[in-house]
Structure formats: C-alpha cells, structure tokens
Amino acid sequence: MKIHEYQGKEIFRKFGVPTPRGIACFSVDEAVAAAKQLGGKVWVVKAQIHAGGRGKGGGVKVAKSIDEVKSKAQQILGMQLVTHQTGPGGQKVRRLLIEEGADIRKEMYVGMVVDRGTQRAVLMASSEGGMDIEEVAATAPGSLRRRPVDIRRGLLHADAATLVQGLALGAAEGKVTDALVKLYEAYAAFDAELLEINPLIVARDGRVVALDCKFVMDDSAIARQPLVSRAGTPEKLTGLEARARAAGLKYIDLEGNVGVLANGAGLTMTTMDVVRHHGGRPANFLEIGGESYTQARPALELLLSKPGIKSLVINFCGAFARTDVMTQGVIEAIEALKPRLPIFFSVHGTGDVEAIKLLKERLGVTPLATMEDACKAAAR
Image 1 (tube, one colour):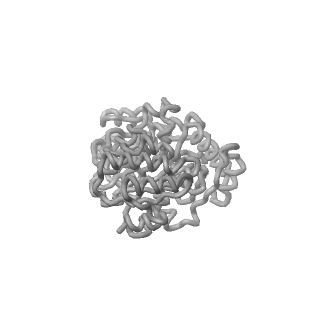
Image 2 (cartoon, rainbow, N blue to C red):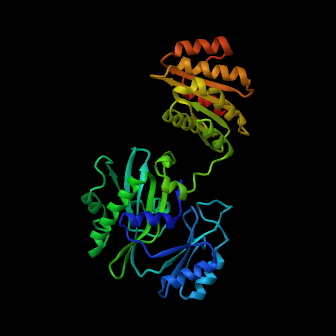
Image 3 (cartoon, rainbow, N blue to C red):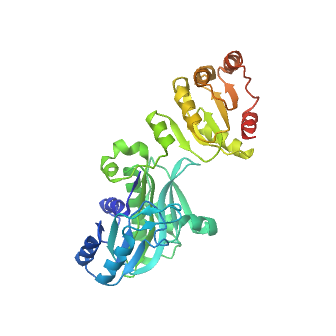
C-alpha cells in the first residue's frame, strides 16, 4: 500500500522529522489560497502521484509569484504524468502539494528498505540526493552506503552516526543522524516496506529538512494500521491477482508463458530462476505450500485462465508437508479440469515414493529425475 507524499510527511512530523510547511490541494483555486496562506516569495508546486521521477516528468515546478503558482497548478493538475515508474500510460494528477521553497546547501538520499537477500531491514544513505537512487546504484555504487539494522534493538544513534561520517555535512551531521534515527522509528512503527527521503537537505541556515517522502506499507499490515490504510492506495492487482487474493492464494502475474506451481516461496523462486536459466519465461509466481491438497484446484484454474500459457512445471519438495498429499490434490484438480497443455513434474522429499506411484497410476505420468530436468522440459 502506498500513500502520497503529503500524507507521509504527516507521519514524519509525528516522529520529529522536519519537513517544509505545505498544504494539499485538489483545485487550482485551492493551490492559490494555499500559497497565500503559507506566505513567502517562493513556492513549490508538486504533483501527488504514487511514482518517483515526478520532477523529470514535469510534475514538480518552482513558482516565484502567486500568478506563477496559479499557472503551474493549471499545468500540473489533471495532466497525465509519465515517469520511469509509471510506465508509458502515466498517472493522472488529481491532487497537488503546495510547499514553501527551501534554500538548499546540500542534498542527500536516505531510506529504510527491506533487503530480501539478507532478510533484514537496511538503512541506506548517499550524498547523491535528488537523483533517481536506482540510477545512483547503477552508475556510482560506491556512493550508496548501507547499514543492516537489527530490528530487535532498533537503529542506534551510533549506527546512524557511523553511516553519515565523511559525507561533508559539517555542523549538520548531528541533525542528520537524529533524522535517520527518527526515520527508522517511523519505518518500524508503521510496518513500512520502504520509507525514504530524496532529498534530505541541509539548508543554508543549518536546518535539516525532508523535502520528499516515499512510503510503501506492507499490505499484510493493513489491518494493523487503520489510519494509514484509510489514506493509502492498495497495491494495484491484475484480474488474476485479485482473483487469487480472494481465493487466499499467493500469486503474482508475470509476462512469460511457462506456468509455475510449487510449495514454498523459496522453492517457487528457485523454480522460476531455473526456467529462466533454460531460456524459458515464467508466467507467474504461485506457491501453495502445505495447503496444496485443498488449494490445488483453484490454483490450477488460475494458471489455466492465463492467456498464452504453453506449459506448466509443478515442483514439490517435501519436509514436514508430505509430497504425496500435495500430489493427491493436484491429481484430483487435473482429473477435474483436464488441461491440454503439457505438465512436467518434479517430486522429492517426504512421501515422494507414494507421490510418484500416484502420478503413474492416476495420470500415467512419471516425474522427471530432477527439478532442472522438469524446468528445462517446460521451457522448450
């Protein structure tokens, strides 16, 4: 679930992360009124959509008069804003954020993310603030610093201080360190998958201010975070993904033509990787775990509904969950649905002798010797 920048900054303020004064608006007249209320001589007119790269797409503009606020708001509000994250269709701008201008001395990027590889929260910082962080990681990886965070103890002040040492922050180093600790506190309190500031600036008067906010909350936390949930926009789902969620299935749509069904997220990802290794393109992520006996039919119906599927690989590896029980569920689903596409099985682990016997007797199918063999056959 994503929330808009202005809503994320409200969370920042609750945790003591400094932000510019700003007012959310839904019309040009409201934008003009907001600029007058904020006062000053410089304002920033910002499109509020769930995507980065708004500035490059023309969705962030500086105004130096009330008349300019009006003209910039007219240009942005209602536009179809296209960025590298929206795709070619873009997103329609339906709301704006009018903020006071900032006198910037230094910009940096900071963010809390989930590192799937290490299964840990990671604090990241870079002196290349205001830029696309993916571009920074690709072109100047040495400038992106990372520090894993032990969630059992949280982010210590000393940890944050170590991360920002040497970034030429001068007297503002302590304030930046404080902002990072507060960033982590907000990240942990609101079940965020991603919470970043790009840029976090040091103003010429010495203040440290979060000029932007990107917040993505774990969808599984929606029930725990009612305030954020009411304001946020849930993850956009394809028709098959919505159908899968309603059926309690863990499914992600992809653009390939080799269907994948396995037990366990790690095994499913590995199966997809092996399909790719052999030149195939996975059509989906779908894992049904130990509940496969009861979930096999809706899972198979889902895969067979996807246009362009040419083959299916079913990969079961049993430990606590028995492969013969999982296979029994799949066999019954195949007998009921009678799919016409080729299906390649790999079955190993607890109950595999019984599972292989079932496949031979009921379907006349012999599983391939290894997972690689099954993936390779499905990818052909």
